[in-house]
Length: 295
Image (cartoon, rainbow, N blue to C red; front, side, top):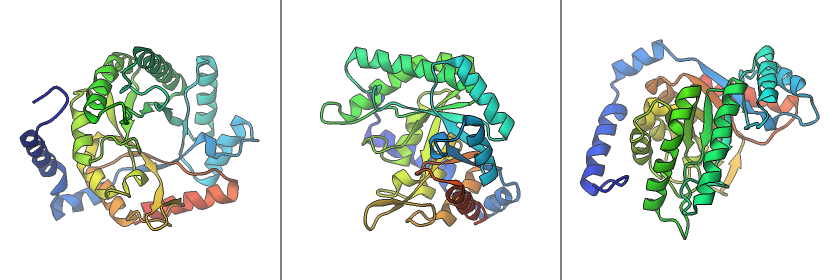
């Protein structure tokens, strides 16, 4: 087996192991999981709140509309980050994660200067998360394109992300790689294997429910990824017309998604990644999430 890339036989063995471990839950196990349902928490991204409001009023509005937490962005000023995190906690909507992204400096790039930029910005993001009180930083791990092959993206991203794990452990902040439209990690089995190869509790999966609808089924990904998932993004997508929609208006099978969350025992935040709006819109959005939770 080549470093970072699995052969056909190895892939089949790994697929079988993942399936045996996560996909074939008996009805009795499912019944038990329903009895001890994990707590699901509603969250939204900070940028979805009205921009004209002060930070304090943004957090108060999020709480009033029915949300339990906030997802923010990296901040270089750690003092300001601590103050912002304190405001959020006092309002009852702690900042639980931040989005670093990674499109601008992917760890799959062949240019050492790009990698250096990626490492420095991730280090800042990890320290920012700690200051804000967040326990997770979202990272787009790699980008496959005309100049970067799938194999190169796989190997390079793992090699460079591993350099960040000691700092993540020191700070107590998880690096969570997300499935996005980057032509990378195109199956739940591969995503699971990619995470497992780090052999670290500080590298997990950030699963985006809407991002797989064009080529898969969210409930399948959730069952396969299992407890590798540390955070979840909520989006919906309509295949006919190829467009993003509000929650419950697209093709996500929310009933199956809800069932799969119980099966894997997911306990944590589900963060909406949608357009922003006013109090009426955000209250309706929180209500849509409540309907999903109740399924």
